[in-house]
Structure formats: structure tokens, C-alpha cells
Length: 326
Image (cartoon, rainbow, N blue to C red; front, side, top):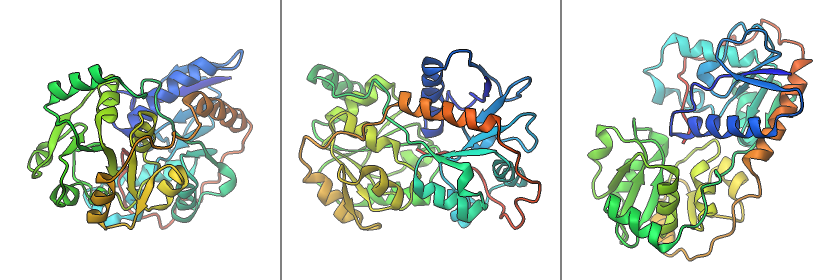
């Protein structure tokens, strides 16, 4: 089997890039005998093409195509993506033509069926996982990152992309919520993030630094009112850090029994519960990138013999932009 894999997203430190990078590495490590995988977004002489992000989906793929949909926020929350252009609408039309669609949770599967009209038989749920470097770090490493980024001894933590404001993530509201512990925001940050009150921004950090920052945090907080998976939550658990989140379907699916849930929008309660969190938290779900890769190879195998969907797809699909999940 010859697989063409669009790896252009891999350098992005946010969720889509982490997914593409981790999955590609695991695919190489778990490749069945005789299988080949090449990095390209222009598949030629391949048996199957995998676009791990919506931006890489092709309207006319020369071979069976697999697309990963991390969420469908742009279709669910159209008023928040008014800057979108027509080319993004075509990406969703292309995703509809994939012979197999990978999603990280059943919550996203339901959205794909409802919003894109993709048959459930073409959708496969394959979860994400912490990278191997996400494990509890010792006091020396924790002290090092504290000094490097000016972090306090005890703090609440949020991890994700801050390159543009996203209303569903409620980062600005979280920053404005009264609290006793300082709030540290980790991730690439644009100018707007530097105007948030009473927060500490680290900018981009390496995986080892991130693991130490997780390990030194009192708790991870996630105030989002919608998520496709919530990768930072399982990373935090892998580092021994308690997690407090808003109760949304995907997070409940991934974290039930492993995190504390509060009602969406109640950020005062979110902060209060996080400040009262105790270690150790439960471990993350027992799922690795190797498990995800083996499941993905099975998807490739089934895609090779699958019939292409018909052309009459996408009628009535609203204009929308793709979304990078954190």
C-alpha cells in the first residue's frame, strides 16, 4: 500500500500541527510490511491520500482520499467566522467527497453527519493522545521553566493558540475572572493576547518545557463552550496535573471520570474549583499515538477498496472557514 500524507500542517505548534506530526511519526513506526508513506499534498501513483486537516482536502483526488475533521466549529458558529472566503467552502465540499473521514470523538462524528451529511458508515472515530514527552517532571525542571518564563510558584494554566481571538474559548473572560492564583497562558500569541489583563504569557514553548509547565501548575482550566477533543487536557493529566473544564459533549466523552466539570459559562465556578483541586488526578485515557496509527492504517486499508462518493454533495453548505483546533 502506498500512502500519500499531507504533512504541511506538522510545523504548526497548535492542535492540528501536533496531530499531523505525532500521527505521521507513529504511522512510520507501525507501518505494516510492504506499506509506504510519502509526505506530499499532490498524490501521484498513491493508493490512498490522507489529508490530516481540512485545508488539504482535494475536490478531485486522483486516488481514494481520507480526511481528518478535528471539529466543525466554522459551520456550527458561522457568525464567528464572517471573514471566510469561498475557497474554504470548497474545502468542506472536498471533505464530503472523502471515502473515509476520521474524527477524534463521537461528538464530532455527530456534527459531521448533521452538518455535512456524511454517512456514519464513512466516519471512523480515532482519538488523540499525549506525546511521549508528556510525563511528570522533577522539581529541577519545574524550577528551570519558572525562572525562564517568570512563572510563580503556584498558578492556573491554560494551553492553546492565541494567534487570533476565538469567542468559544472564552480566554478574555477567563483572564477577567477574579481569582486568587495567577493565570498562565501558554501558546503562540498575537498582539491582542498581550492586552489581556492580569495574565502571564509564555509564547511558544518546546514539548519538554510544556511538560514542566504542566507539572508545575496547580490545575489546567479549559473554559471553552465547545471542543472537538481537548488535547491539552489529556496532556495535563499525563503530567499529573488536575483538569477542570466546562461540560461540553466532546470533553465529557474524553474525560468522564478524569476531570471536574462545571456548567458552561460559569467561569467563577471554573476558577474556584480549579483553585481547590488536589493531586494526583486520574491518569489520561489509555490510548497512545501508536494505537491511533494502527487504527489509521486500518482506515487506509478499507479506503483503498471503497467506492468514491457521488458528485451530488454539498448542496446548501454554508460559507465557512476551516478551524485549527487547540
